[in-house]
Image (cartoon, rainbow, N blue to C red; front, top):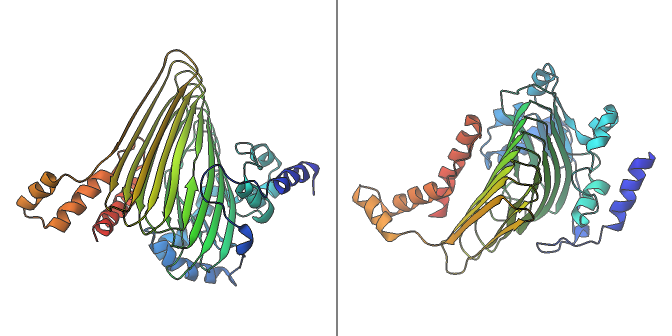
Length: 408
């Protein structure tokens, strides 16, 4: 083991008992890992959970990176991307082949942030996707990645790294899911994203977990001068608990727009938010969330914008809609400015479906259930500037299903 990696591992080992700031603590020793037998087994096992995130068997087989449990599959689209100089592989393989990858490994997120980042370093075995887009290359087709768990009481640890070179563009869609039969599992995913000067990265993540699954994403994004990062996060399933608080750091004239759509159900715990740090002049950020609480779900929608440079702009919008007397929704917007000339605003509201809207739609021939579904679909749909058409279509189809599910 090289000296630089040994030092990283030592830091991780010291942090294995370090609890996270938010979310229920998890006993990592309860979970184990398993590998399917071969590549064909991967695609067979991926079929059911992939459908839950809107992907057909054909789309899964073409995806750039599919990880089922601890086994990896690369779809045929990878070869076409390689002709453009785009690299899609596992993070472990990238570290072995390309020495320069070390400059991006645990650079955005400290390995000892908490027990979950530490566990990824110690137990992932190099799993997770690595994507590199050379400067000036604009990848026209969406790049799909899938991270799936198929067995109960399984732990999946992944470390993803995405690098979009100066002036390059990438549209990345990641789906995470389990089949209905999984009684309990653990997914911990670290993602480090680097967006170059005047580059664009759009990222959509769709989660469909299960009632006994704990999920701990850890994401950090660095956007260089003039760059753009657009993120769309959607979770629409029961879950034991999920806690995510991605951070985006923006240099001069960089911008970000993040949207989170949460449909809470059962007695699930969702602690989800975003942070944007305006560290360059002319940087801007918009954080939007839509939250629906059903059953006895508990949802915290966190959002924070911190201004360190002027001029800069930031806006937070959080809207919540409880559909049950036992559901809990907490909106937690934070604004912090350390400079003059930064313009930061926020809007937060928790309300209910207006009866007059339902009555109006029913007067137009809709049933009450159809009217409620239509209103919820409009509530959950968020216009995200810069989101590619293909991604928007996938999200719209998912939201249509969610609106129908929410009224059921």
